[in-house]
Length: 158
Image (cartoon, rainbow, N blue to C red; front, top):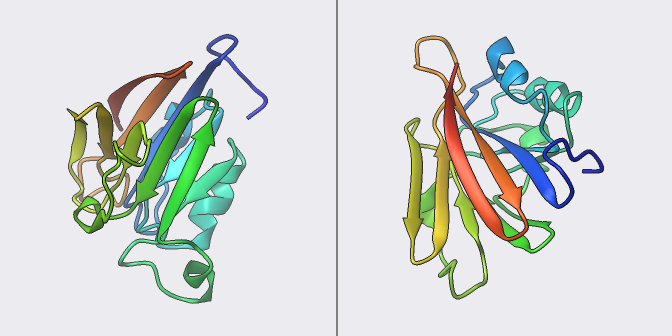
């Protein structure tokens, strides 16, 4: 995370989920200037993460469709600390077993539904990038802008 294309104290985070073994070139293009990439599960193949790591450092969690030795190594949840901001990452937001506001999280990142979501609940940003998987789905990813403790997200159609 040494690069900071958005200025001092700013970070651009690429958020992706539900690739199901396929990484679209459009997703890589959307993440070209990111400082970090978060994959919220249902990765499908380890090569997806390897390719994303060529763009930026990657944090990833295991989704319900991720199986095999490579997937067992992935955590079910991840806490990502970037400056003043704590991000909580899990695949299925319905499995959230904590109060993110009380725990000090600024953002909960999830996948699973294949539907993009940007929602503020009790001061916590809930972000689901949708699916970036096979072309039978409408593809989306998200970009998360961090400036100090301020967060702003938007969905990018592929």
